[in-house]
Structure formats: C-alpha cells, structure tokens
Image (cartoon, rainbow, N blue to C red):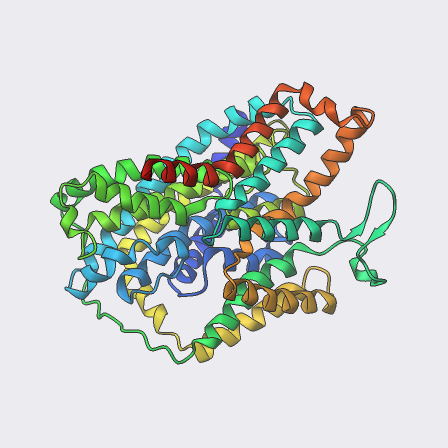
Amino acid sequence: MDAFLAGMGILVDPYMLFLVFAGTLLGIIVGALPGISGSTTTALLLPLTITMPPTGALAFLGSIYCAANFGGSITAILINAPGDPSASATAFDGYPMAARGEAGKALGISAISSAIGGIFSVFVLIVAAPLLARAAYNFGPPEYFALAVFGLSMVAAIGGDSPTRNLLSAAFGVLLATVGLDLTTGVERFTFGIYALSDGIEFIPVLIGLFAMAELLEQAAHGNVVKEYIKLSAVKLPSLADFRKCAKAIILSSGIGTFIGTLPALGATTAAMICYNESRRWSKHKLEFGRGAIEGVAGPEAANNAAVGGAMVPTLALGIPGSATTAIILVGLIVQGVRPGPHLFNEQPTLLYVVFASMLAANLLYLVLGLGAAKLFARVTLIPPAYLWPGVFVLSVVGAYAPNQSMFDVGTMLVFGVLGLLFRRFGFSPAPLIMGLVLGRMVEETFKQSLLIFDQNWLLFLSRPIVVLLFALTILGLSAPALAHGWRRLRAR
C-alpha cells in the first residue's frame, strides 16, 4: 500500500505532473505528424531521459507512448495520412467522415474511445502485471532462457507480412547482440579491431537510425507527394446517440486490444486492425463501414490505446517488449540501471506504480486536450517538410552523439538509418531487429548460466516443467502458420 500511495503521489508532484503533461502534449503533436510515430519520438528523446531520475524518465516516455496513438488519429481523420501506424485502421472511416463535414464528430469519438480503451488497459495492467510477476518470481536461468526464446519466436507476428522475414530480422538482431567482449571468456567477438565495439553496439544509435533516420530517408524519397487537406470548422463532442451507437464497439475493442497488447510482439497496429474487423462483424450497420461509420473510428481507437497498457504487462513483468515502443522503453529502463522482470515488483514497487499513475494521468490529459484543442493540433500538419525533416536530422545527430559524446555512435546511427530504409524497401520490419538486440543478450547469458547449472547436460532443460511448456508454445507459435495453411487446404479439398 505504501508503494501504491507513493506511486500515485506523482499526481500531486508538480515536477512529475509537468513531465506527464509535456510527454502527453508532445505525444499528441508527434503522433499527428505523418511519419513521426511514437516509437520514433521515444528513440529520439531517450538520451534526454538519461539525466532524469528513473521515475521521471518512465513517466515521460510512458506519456508519449499513450498520447502518440491518439495523436495519429488526427491526421488519419483530417488528411487520410495516419500519423502513427496504429491509426491506419482509423483512416478507413475517419477520413470519409471528415470529407462529408463530420471531422469534429470523428475527432471527438476518437478522443473518447482512446481514453476509455487506455484507462481500461491501465486497470488491467495494475491487476495483471503483479500476478504475472508473482508467478514468474521463482524463475531460474533455464526458465528465463526458454522465456526469451519464446519472446523471440513471437516476433514472427510483429510488423510486415512475412513471418520468415521477421524471424530473419530478429536473428540478425541476436547476432548484433553478440558483438563485443564476452563476459564469460573475456574474448572479443566481431569487433574487427575497433575499440568502440568492445562494449557492444549501443542501443540508442541503433534505435534512432532504424526509426528516425530511416523515416527521414523514406520521406525524402516521397517529397513531391501532395496531400489533400480537409478544413476543420469546428470541434464538437459527439452526441449521446453517437456514443450509444459506439458503446458495443468500444467495450469489445477495449477488451480485445488489451489482450492482444499483452502478447509479446503484436502491438497496437495489429490490435486496431483486428478490432476494426470485429467492430464491423458485431455492428448493426455493416454497410456504413468504409463510407464513414462512426463505429469504424471508435473500435480501432479504443483498441490501439488499450494495447498500450497491455503491451506494458510483459515489458515490466517479464522483461519482454510487448511492442516496438516498449522495446525502446525497456532500453530506457536498462540505461537507468533498472532491471525489468519479476524482481522489479519486490525491489522497486514504487517505480511501477509511477508508471501506472503516469499512464492514467496521460489518458485523462489527452482526453481533455483532444476535445479542447484538436483544431489547433490539426494545424501542426501544415509544417512544411522543408523545415520539419532537417529538424529531425539535427535531433537525430544530437541524440546519437550525446550519451557517449562519440562520433562513432553518429556513424552507427547513419549506417542503421540506411539499413532501416533497405529493410522497408525489401519488406523487412525493423521492430524484430530491435527485439532481437534487446533479448539476444538475455538468451546468451541465461543459456550459459543454465549449462553451468546443468553441468553442460542440455537435456536437463527437459526436466523443468515450465521450460518444457515454453518450448512447446514456441514450437506451436512457429508452426501455427503452416498448420493453418494445411488446414485450409484440407478443408478446400
């Protein structure tokens, strides 16, 4: 109870409230800028949080994460260009509503649905994360190894359409995690005589390169595309009848979105797409979808914001990122010297309740800001690319250089920026690479520890029931697409 009260105390701490407000406002703005997603922003601002206390850093990054998903709906509705990938489904019906003069109604139901979904997921997070951590508290190195392997197998479903490409990307991330000095043997690996690689590849330059620089290069390649803008004359709250019409979609999507968010590697975009289909399936007005159905805005927005809280469950309780953005937040925890996982609930419970309180406050804040200042936020989309992207480049260079004052890190950021662009061109998602880089070290360290415990007899892995269960789930997850394809062919015959 003391930890709970201390965590909730941020709601009366002026400094923490300022960080939550700044993160929420920044999240809405960057979410509304096509191409600059929440993951890009958290990667850019991660170096800034190094100087903050761990509670402030988490509150700031968590607020950006919550608000960016809502901010993406502003441009999805107004200019048919989702500011965040999670708002892609919102554009299906949001833009047609704006085109027929109902932009205010669409933005209003987006803000309300987002807040309901986000608040619901925070309460689930408060209840589920400690329970999951309590169950995992007695995990040893073998269980953590199996858990990390299971987490890596889940990247098959994150971003992109090809599970094979996602797994290859994750495997490359694991390979990058082996660069540097092996703490067990003292041998340098893959350093090629470069002293700066002795400590391994830094997370922050990789993150900034794969997200911010790659997006900059992508936007530069489409610099002549002209977007059609919709004039916004007024922002009005949806009527009570509109809210009643959307109630089923909001409730259904909040539950499904939270559940999908808790599954490592799926994230808000997947949740929004699934819940758009489910909202249509259970709607009494199926023919309106795709033509400006208000339920088609409410469902995806409730889902993608519910997935935010859900994605924090495995991130905090197990140390496995639930999405690309939580992978960056996980890096922020590690940089701050915080060890995520079951021990966190006993060692630093106040830190966890700070996360809960900041996410709750961020959801309430963007509800107020979204309803009261949507017209103002919409004007952010009018920033000329000629000013926007040079600013992003400067921030990227500063963000990569600042943590270690190293030009080598700037070069690393540029290399991974080009790599990120190539990933996009050839259908690879950068998110699995990030997760492979984060989980790769955990896989290697726990595997070595397990072999020491088992006296080099790897068959003893099968003597641990939890390990066997996780291995079985890993095999099932990897073989599920092939099994589903075979089942469809069998039924077709």
